[in-house]
Length: 302
Image: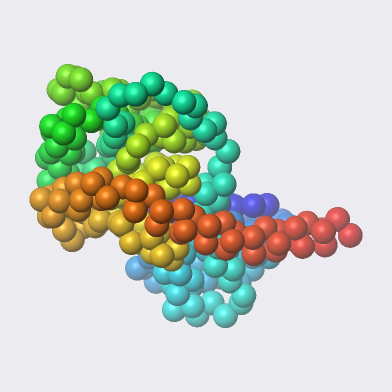
């Protein structure tokens, strides 16, 4: 059983309900005596006693444990996990996509991934994620800035919730509302798959976003990108690869972030070069996980 933990949900910052579901899936697998692979994912933060105990136990019982960044590896060690831990990277670095074809001359295409989660003030509307700035105001300032320098601004949803109780987290509704507010922007479609989203993002000339996997889509398709972090998972992933363009929405103010993004756009050729070098490091780190998975499958096959 390969369990990716939704990439970043093996932590208690997203609420106990999600984490309990994570533990139930893992311990049912342990009880069935089926080898469990923890695919590369964020580990922690865990702030509650019960979650720390169960996290340590499931990692001890797993056949393979892989993290996607150095901060997660350290978190496992600080919880007392002594077994081998493979420090890899995010599997979305190798997500298939269709590279963009030639396009006619025109203004630079700038993609802005708008987070429905942050537009609504988090899951509860009470800013439990600790955002230090006016995120909706920053989203509007970014649109105004790039429209002001005659870019073609694309509003790109990445987390798409079509129905149900989590529609407040939907990026597409947030992007559509901003597209109506700012004539001339391009509303990206509600994608049907991750590869479809990545193929669209690959057609941008510059990108920024508060959804980490929207940023990974840009990063891994050669698009210069500024990740806009709301948790340590951003710095953990990109920082572990030596990519230092992340801005922090929990510590920096809106004007500082806007200035950094504007400067990165002006120097986007350098940003793209930095991203290419970091991507090569990430793909190399993934090879250790692939080797461990192949070895486990070989043993399981006798």
